[in-house]
Length: 254
Image: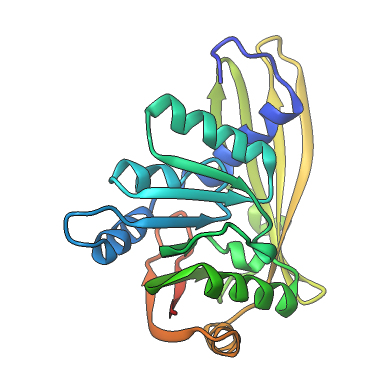
């Protein structure tokens, strides 16, 4: 993105993603360590990052020398990842693809599904479709790792008073995202935010955003994976930080 780029809906879309998701780095050592562990001696691992966004995980994996493919259903995110990888000279291929309908025509030594991507899918049917795709794309000696959050502490607007927003200045335009609630809605976890943009002229825009996550536990996902023909391996964990909840990681083999 150019330092003089004018605001567009696509640019706002990328910037909100970078602000609300891109700053999370606590899991990067896990993903790069997993790739290093499973890479062949003296060679690069073929890695698929499912739900890659703008490259939060895919770019560090590629920077570590792994031949990485990032897939996402969002074409704007995929285009931005393609641009960032080219700018940095990193070996990242990008595929606009629904996680429930993966058909990339190749196999991978590591398939990573970070940051609760699986919980964005439409229920058990969506997860089953993704798991069948993972089985089809996983190399015989490969491993798949799927991160979930299985415990959240609900809070409402009154509890959010005083919470500092995530803020970032993009070329003089300030974006701020403030969490205002975590609730249960129709059996799903609803993450609500208030977003505000302040332009250099002083013009302000305020909107709301809601992300819905399916409620999911490790045992359920492991049972669904086994039914899809995958081997269930010992679980892993990504520790919580002062700013982010931790993740449980379901580990699967071909």
